[in-house]
Image (tube, rainbow, N blue to C red; front, side, top):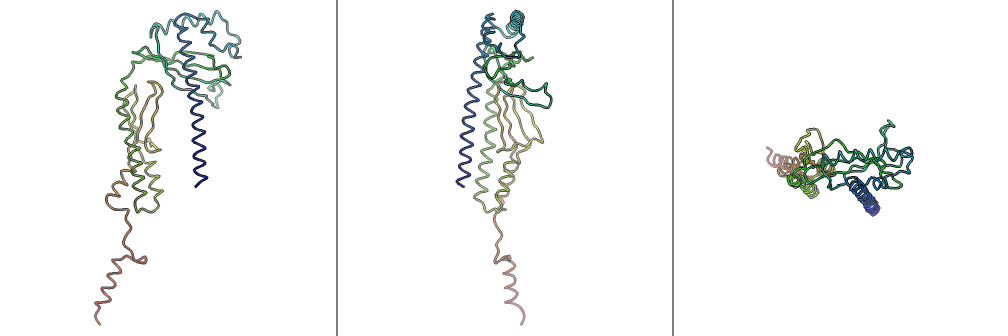
Length: 277
């Protein structure tokens, strides 16, 4: 038991430090993109180039004049669609590995998605960051222009979703206190049998996946800008089934006496004592 607790503690510590490192990188990506975007919208193209990884081999053949012309065109497109004052939100960072080399992220780089908005509509920048210098290798705007959704409905749906793991934890405690044998099988059923899955996305709204099992107590949550924010929970059919079984008293063992049902034993005693001599 002590070794098990030590292992859990070690994993928590490693996860904590990894999470802190990821959060620190996320702020760096967002801040660099914000600074680049402010320079871009103010037509300060030389400062934009100062935030780009021009020493990276992938940018070795870049022509400064051509790059400035591309930045000006990019700036005009953003300004025309979203205006000149934008807010920025980190969405995700990833490295891709694939058997198809053309789909891989270039070595020592990270692909980052940053959401930007003008208080009414939002879009998404896709950037390629150089890992050594933490500067931008490439930036482009995805073909996305959506109205900012009402997040009140999104968070209210989250309150409903949070009820699912609370119920499943309650049922695990009930099973633990019950008279069931092989309780671990019931725990697994409660954890795994959360289906169908109901999803609410900030942009797409409500949807149902009938064969989507939600494990880990029946809920998942994703918050990556407006585009990928979603709550998903599964109907806790495992927990509901055992709730009914407990209500009916199915967990209680049968009345036995040395392996023989007590009712049968009483019947045998009755016939023995009342038989015709």
